[in-house]
Amino acid sequence: MIRTAHAVWDGGLKDGKGVVSTQSTALNGMQYSFRTRFEDGVGVNPEELIAAAHASCFSMALSAQLGDRGISGKVDTTAAVTMENLAITKSALTTTVTAPGADRAKIEEAAHAAKEGCPISKVLNAEITLDLTIDA
Image 1 (tube, rainbow, N blue to C red):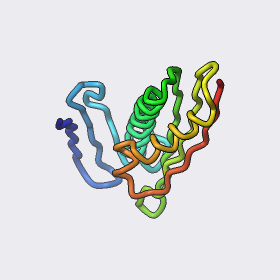
Image 2: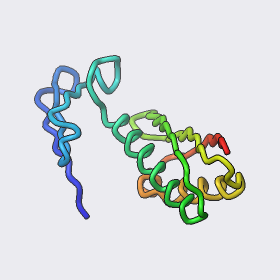
Image 3: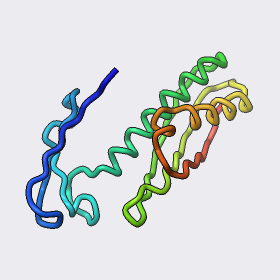
Image 4: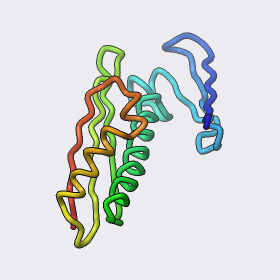
């Protein structure tokens, strides 16, 4: 499986601007710039796209791990990506699993396996933390 995205940048680093689109068109000509990345400009930036990828990948991986343990429920994840000195240094996952009646130990085991096994976790060269809340 291959997924694609396309980005165009026009101009210098600080005065230029870009657009990014994805194969699915979920992002279609979305604007990005120095201001959206390093200040408070309106538009997308690579770090928030990585956060979105990590949150969604982890949620799916955790759902699969829960299913392997006979647990069905809702997984709600936020990823906060930290960039320091032009390097992604951390992705902090904050997750709530809602699975009434489920075994808490199995949910914790599934969450740990998902954190390690999620394809985005595997590609990140960063510290990955998990703050897990269980509503069972």
